[in-house]
Amino acid sequence: MNTEDCAFKKEGDNKAEEKQTARPDMPDDVLDGRLGQLCATRLRHFPRAYSFGAVVTTIGALVPRIDNPPIRPNLFWCAVGDKGSGKSQSLDTTFRLVEMQPPTLLEAKFGSAEGMAEQLKDTGSDSVRLLSVDELGHMLAKCAIQSSSFPYVLNSAFYKDEQIGGSKKQQFSVNCRISLVGGLVEELFGDAFGLATTGGLYDRFLFGLCPSPYQYLYRPFEGPTVKLSPAVPRIASNVWDERDQWVKEGIPARIAELALRVAYICAATDRREVVQASDLKPAMAFAQYQVRVRSVLAPNVGENPDAKCAIKIRSWLLENARGGAWVRRHDLDRGINSYRLGPGVFNRCLNNLWFNGEIELDGKAKAVRLITQ
Image 1: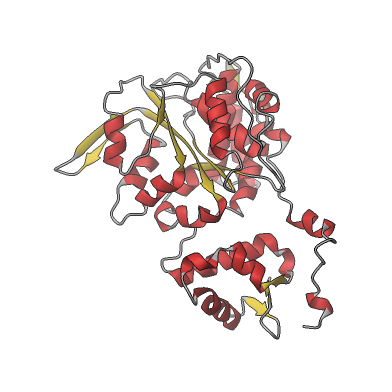
Image 2: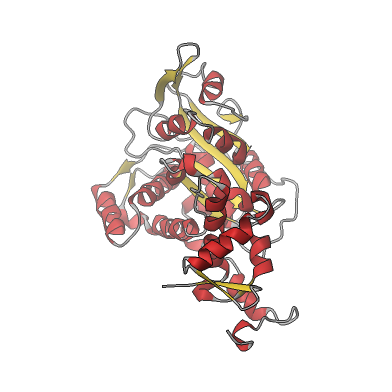
């Protein structure tokens, strides 16, 4: 590689670099009905990547619980961004805006499925709970404990209200529709959503990724609250035909399912009697966003430090050095926070990836690029 191939921009000449590394917000096209209006007005100070998922998941917990709903309105929502970017504040503001309060709102941290069930034991056959765990990392760490039943219970809760389980010493039963909201620091995402979540929990989550550049500035809650009373709309048969077309065009089936849940909640908030295929344009935009965001927010399925580091390297280069662009080795090192994996792991992984032909190093090993096929 010659000097020109590895030329880096001076600090002052960064417009082109900013354009390449800028991360867009969730598009306006996802905004649907009354909930979309709330995001565009009362929650406009937050990124849509935070506000829309927060408000849709919150209002989904207000949709009446019925037997055999046409579409289940419970969601698992995760806002992802840097520390201090407003993840928790976006949830708190949403709760205050729509007057989401206990007992429907349950703000707690759970160390096990049994602990969660204990908090839900007094719920009845019409009960709905919105579990707000703030930082999801704590719950997901418990899911990663060997032999933990937590991820399986959460997987089932996405589709079933009634569950019975536990051990001989500690049995539990739950009869409650559960929604879940929380946030994660971006640099910890791959580790939090690790091997234990690839059995289905990761696929059940919706994600919002903070745009960049973005700076969160706190402001207190102001203005009147909003009283919403969602209905239970019917689903026209052409909705399923439209969903099938999405899948044919490349939208993963699970993401299509989640997008329909979002559309259903928006229609319920507007108290529409029926959801038609013609109502689904915002849901399609939301599904497309989820596909894009999952290319960045992927679980780290490595089972040891070397495997985790290699996955982090590939993922970081895919997002930050598109098309096989050269980047400083130092920037890659800092970008993946390699110090968290232990001494020597980063250098060893770089050498292994180079030996396997997955990356290229310059002559002095000061720069690196991903070899694209």
